[in-house]
Amino acid sequence: AAGVIQSPRHLIKEKRETATLKCYPIPRHDTVYWYQQGPGQDPQFLISFYEKMQSDKGSIPDRFSAQQFSDYHSELNMSSLELGDSALYFCASSGRHSPEQYFGPGTRLTVT
Amino acid sequence: GEDVEQSLFLSVREGDSSVINCTYTDSSSTYLYWYKQEPGAGLQLLTYIFSNMDMKQDQRLTVLLNKKDKHLSLRIADTQTGDSAIYFCAENGGYQKVTFGTGTKLQVIP
View 1 (spheres, each protein chain N blue to C red):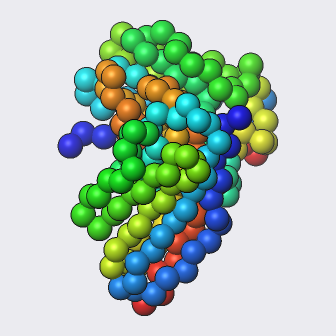
View 2 (cartoon, one colour):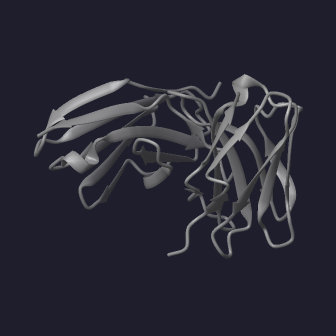
């Protein structure tokens, strides 16, 4: 079965640079969620989109923005990167009215 | 608040049963989940339970929910070395964000 696809899988950036993470949900899933997982920590919710509209917002810094496109893929844009942004970034998707959130493999971002 | 707490570590012998416990505070939680994360890997949805249920069984996995005490447990029967991973309890109040627990590292001793 098709899963959530994230790209890139690994990304190394320097402080103050920008990064764009991409997420392709499972086919026919219309809701996308972004989570950040720091080393040794539990995943923290950043933001979600339903039918291309922002549906919920968590602890996402103002330096980050995200959007969902007409094909339901989503991008997380991160600017003015800081060392503390180094983490695993997960995207998850779910179908309409479904409580099942399926996670992608994650993008490991390292800021040096 | 939406705190979800778990014990940090559990060690069991191969073939024994494992029981991972979780407590949560949000009384409006609608769904409660168990996710498995292996080192360097993503989060695998193992099972979930609707808040009006008190038990769900899926092959070797049994989920018990005590809504009154806001306590959730995951029992893994006949634990195998491949079950070694971090197990996250999680909850949500609907079809929105999932709030994760601190994770329990399960070590299976051969």
